Image (tube, rainbow, N blue to C red; front, side, top):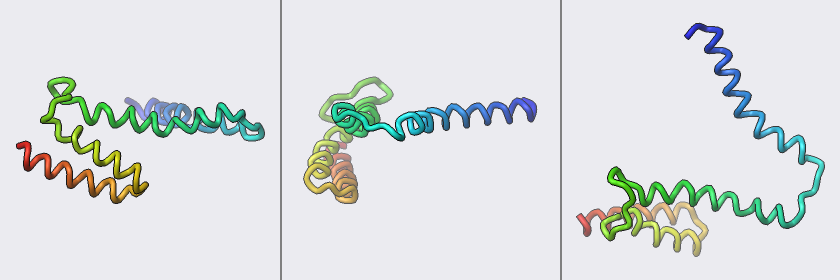
Length: 108
């Protein structure tokens, strides 16, 4: 790949990263969104988090793993409850690490 092609590729990647983020900001900057849209947008972070976590908790090299041997799936339950009750990321991570360590010790 020559230098011009590399430069154009990087420029194109920058454009497709930057434009979708700036375009809604420019279009919606002076508008007030309806309450229903604002409420709907409020669910996006939780949906993205769930979309990232579910495969990490359930998919292994052999496929989906919903068995009792899946330590990460078991550790997710107390993590969810800790995060929900305390709203503390540090406490949630600490509980998750402790649960995975205990699960590996007792289930292995």
